[in-house]
Amino acid sequence: MPSYSVTVATGSQWLAGTDNHIQVTLVGSKRCSGQYLLDKVLHNDFEKGAVESYEVTTSEELGEIQLLILEKKKRMVQDDWYCKYLTVKAPSCEYHFPCYRWITSNKEIALRDGRANLPQNDKTEILQRYRRQELEERQKLFGWREWEPGFPLSMDVVHYKDLPLDVKFDFKKETDFILNYKEALTNLKLNQFVNMFTSSWTDFEDFKKIFVTISNTVSGKVMQHWQEDRLFGYQFLNGSNPVMISKCKEIPAKFQVTSEMVKSSLQRNLTLEEELQHGNIFIVDYKLLDGIPANTLDAHTVQYVAAPMCLLYKNIEQEIVPIAIQIHQKPGPDNPVFLPSDSNYDWLLAKIWVRSSDFHIHQTITHLLRTHLLTEVFAIAMYRNLPEVHPLFKLLVSHTRFTIAINAKARDQLIGKNGLFDKANAVGGGGHIVLLKKAMTDLTYESICFPQSIRMKGMESKEDVPNYFYRDDGLEVWKAITNFVKDVVCFYYDGDQAVREDTEVQAFVKDVFVNGLRNCKASGFPESIQTKEQLIEYATLIIFNASGQHAAINFGQMVRRVVPDTFLHGQDGFFALLLEGSPS
Picture 1 (cartoon, rainbow, N blue to C red):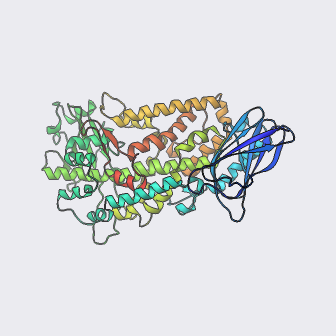
Picture 2 (picture 1 turned 90 degrees about the vertical axis):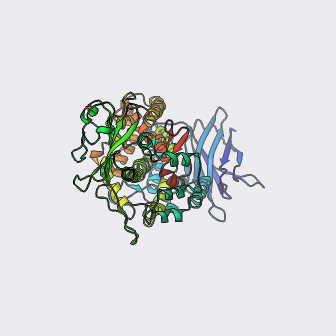
Picture 3 (picture 1 turned 180 degrees about the horizontal axis):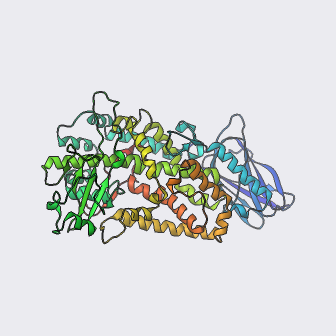
């Protein structure tokens, strides 16, 4: 009689083990084994971290093992179980069945072996049936919900606690989150920090109070150089929000700067128009903030939101420095252009307004909308349309891990009513919601596709724009991801026709566009994928945005010139500590 050795690995995280019964059924190409209870006499099976082996004997050989059906039967109470994997050692070969999920009910779970497979290549009825069944169950768990009108759709839960267990933080991540949150509140003295912004500062020395308990090399260097024009300009290239700067080809009519105004800042004896033609002028425009209401939740404190424009110049030392700032979008006598030749404090305050505006765009748009919320759209659509056996699911799942969870916590604690944005942000109290909706018009496929976004801004040339390490490193990361994705796609798809015939990947892409992005044709996101090249770029975009891009704008950039061997976290370091912890 053929014998099959079944090995079961239980997760090592807290409460991963179970006291419930576990049954398996081996589904072979010839026949099924019937249900077998995995149980050892006088032995505690399936304890945390345990790896146990059991013998399953059948009357006849099963053939190639195609499925392993797993069931958890409760004893006294329902007891959740985290199964890592199972292996089946057959008479002729060995099969590995990855699971890596919580099993919380008595419903049977069908596991495929670790090999990926496209839907059109599953020929047997039983494989097709269980493939459909997996997606049907997932679509019940991962529904779409409108958290705010005009936002990308998000996970259909009200609070973090309502999420499926498999997408919640694991015990270690949850513990790290709580400890980081408490540490941030303690170290940054949040109450004192917030109170500092509910009244006007009387001295720039007040700025140092933020760094009282977290003084280090980074904060020390920033405190030494933060008022300098060269550091101000450099941060547009390699600071926390290095996505705003673009090459200026023509001064906007709304910007009242003239060649005569900036003459003293131009070092090549050229006019402003000539410098424009030579590609030495850059611009940052915070037009999205125009008309955004300021926070009015504190009746005793009047807050303001500016929508400035900043003109920058590449000087003969190849540094990017500011040469003109206009605080508001609409030109007029009450909206002057500030210049480096103005009094020291006038110029410094103008730069502070720009930095304040940069913070609002960075936190709400660059960080929240364009990485977190967009990646959640991809994650939900992935769970709804790609079964675990699909190669694209295997490729994407690790890059979207915890995204749904962190976003649910953000809606609870950060951007929701009475969240941190309302307490410590000038666009809180609803302005941040208006701002994000407004920014949806700029959320396009082209702007998310990294190489295209760099070209759109005219920032692709290393010769014309030196020391733009965000661009240089980003393109290298994009290239590496593309090469990896290409290997995977080309392994599973023998041609463009195979991509078009993949009903699951087509449903995934359509779900992203129709539901996640609200059927917005202006976004430029595809409704279907027609070629291997398209699929490679699409998958690369998802992975890069969730990993490389998020790291770049969340954790700050290495400063290699103005402040050697340090990181400039800017304002984002505070929120990174609150929500996501340190880069390590």
